[in-house]
Each structure stands twice: as structure tokens, then as C-alpha cells.
Length: 257
Image (cartoon, rainbow, N blue to C red; front, side):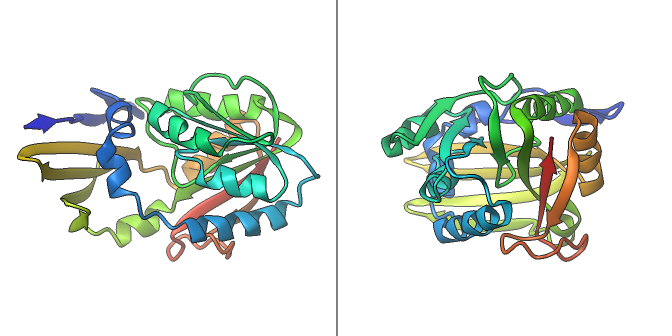
């Protein structure tokens, strides 16, 4: 059996883990298999709506931070922006590079480190935050995003709405993708939302664990303000409906420098 696991506990308001799960899982072929059916139409519709909301200047420089394989980056560039996408996963960036052109490029980057330049807009979408060992690392990431924006720059942050997610949590389900049947168990433990994924392929058993800090909207806004951001607006879904604490699936925040 191949097992990738994390023992996780909360101590003095600091998240502590025994290993960084995303280092192995995001570059695994099984990660891409499990999530291969992510809705590109939904992503495109969201980008169109948020672009219309933001009304950026022609050829504004945008960063898709934690871009994965680049689905949001591609749509942003099609809207007329100059776009860069970065991600921790080298495999995802190698896939995304096939879509590069004069207005779209990709590079590997750990978001805990300073950004290489300043941008007019930075996007962090589809719950691409909350992965790190400590609250300090999360705050440091937001500080770097703030510093990586031009004056009057805008940050678009998209996170799951934890109150809704916990209320509607599906504790166990089985998902079949191609030849693989994934058994998924979800639970909240000590301030983290955990997803345990187990399956068998070619006679070999595998277990992976995803862990995301269960940041509530008020915690996120406090960290944003500490970084220096001014909160401009909040939305509760990809149609940009108003945010509601108990009914909204997403917590989408627009912050300005």
C-alpha cells in the first residue's frame, strides 16, 4: 500500500502539519483524473462576469495565482488582458504551457514567496488557499499578494464558504473516474476540512489526504485587512449573487490596494 498522510492539530491558533500534502497530490496523475471534469463552462462564465464587474483597462496585466492547468488564465486572456499564470505544481504548469502566446505565459511559483513583478489584478480562485502549516504562512502569502499589486490594484479571492460547506458536508461518497473508483471521506478536525481519498489501481492501494484550513469569512477579512487591503465587495457564487453566510456556496471577495 502507498500512503500519503497528514497528522494535523491546532495549537495556540497555529495550524501545524507533519507534511505538505500538496507536494505529492497536486503532481499525481490521480489528482488530475479525479478532478478532470471540472466545469470549464462555469469557469468561463465566471471570468466573463468578473471581468465585466472589474472593467479593467485594455491590456491590463493580470496574474492567476495557483492557476492549475490554466483554465481561468486562458479565459482571462481571451477577454483582452495580458495574463500570467503560476502554480506550485510543475506538472500543471507544463500542461498549461501548451496554451502560451504573446499575451499568456505560465511559470512555477510557491505563493509563500514574493512575486517577481507587480500586477494590476491578481486572482486566487477555486479555493487555492488554506494549504499551509501555519497562520503565519497564510498571512505572509496575503502580504506578498498585496506587495505584488500596482497602486490601486485589485485582488479577487475565491474561497469556499465554510459555514455552508460544514452544514452540507457529504461525509462519504464513491466517485468513479475512468478505471478508478475513488472512496472519499470528508470531516472537519481542529480547524481544518479534511478529505481522505483512497482507491485501488493495477492491484496497488493508494491513500491521499487533502487538508484546507477552515477559514470563516470574518477570519479571511481580518487577514486581508492586516495585509493592508480594503474590502470592496463580496459575492456568494460564480454568478456574483450577494453573499449570504448560511446559503452561499462560495465566499468571493474583491479587495483593493
